[in-house]
Image (cartoon, rainbow, N blue to C red; front, side, top):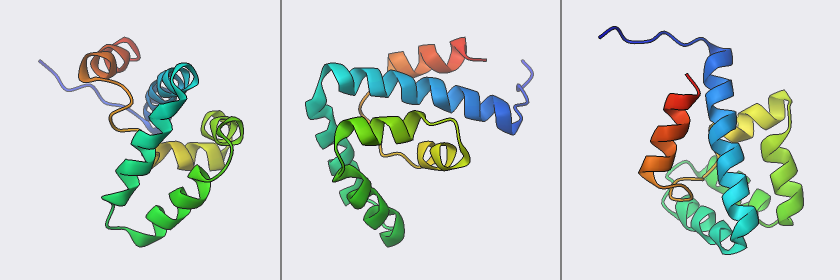
Length: 100
């Protein structure tokens, strides 16, 4: 089976779909923001940890807008958003494979 080749816009589109699903899950269960807070405690990159500590101190509607923003800033934040654990493996798998 050949490995698919993705360009940057493909990767950005797939990542946006994952982030949209995570945002919807957090909208439904706001306590999942604690998953994000817990994730950054394990990061070794101090600058990213500090950046996300500041972002996670903002009200959810503001952070939500930033994560979904169609801008370079939004894309950059999506690339390192601490969303691991918000979606389970099956949901991530389904989203990634339906986005290709």
